[in-house]
Length: 330
Image (cartoon, rainbow, N blue to C red; front, side):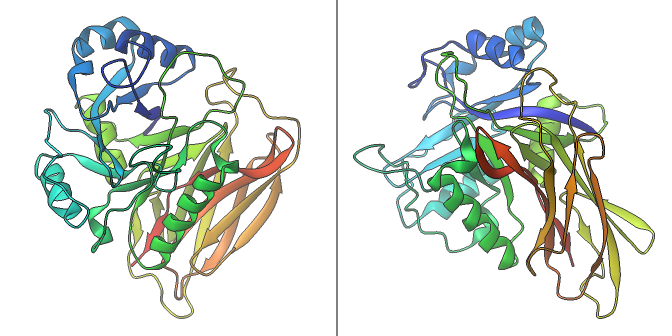
């Protein structure tokens, strides 16, 4: 497996951005990203020349589009051609989701709790969802310095609620990147864990997100594995035969402080690693970059999911710095 540093929500001047795809790709490369998804509003024309730009920059570019409606914004990635969103109304979003999935794409809720009209038309999610299994992922961190913003805190809470209800939905970050103006705010990264196989990087990235193999961070890459009955399961996997009375598993968490070295900085400190779950916090450990790990025996009974979280100080605020997607229990 290989981890790929991705930015999954970007725009060019083909919608409301102030940058070309070449400028976007060069900027992403300079920030240490391996991959971006171009998700212009209601158009895919900005992807023209994608292959040439990939060769020039060494950056992988995932095709995508942000469905931009009066009732919500939905990021779709992995589609090879434009898919018309206009027939979709507030009560039939599932018809649109079905068309995305039929074409091999993924659909995610974009910034579901951002202020809506008149500040941002459709930014607040109002589509009626009758089956959450049709949602592939939720963008729980949007824009810069994401974890401290109230709309993102609400999105993160929504994701947690759906995990507690038994749904297996991935969580991502997205800068909603429109221009190349510099910022001192911390940038979030969605790391996708790719299989080592002979296939285009963008195809593998889409499959990784579909499988929930994702870890989101302002800096260190957080990894999680669960060992049960002699077999080890990674992020996005399901532990078979779990939730058995009296049985236990071992969870191992590590934080890689060397990723994208030089592209992020946190103040010197001791961090807190947590194992969260549908049953609450299962384990907690104070760590440093020199000893960045936690290992704990966890009871399987009644467990639906666990995830790892890294907490600490960022620009004088104590907040969550990184989190993994879930490991599930069947």
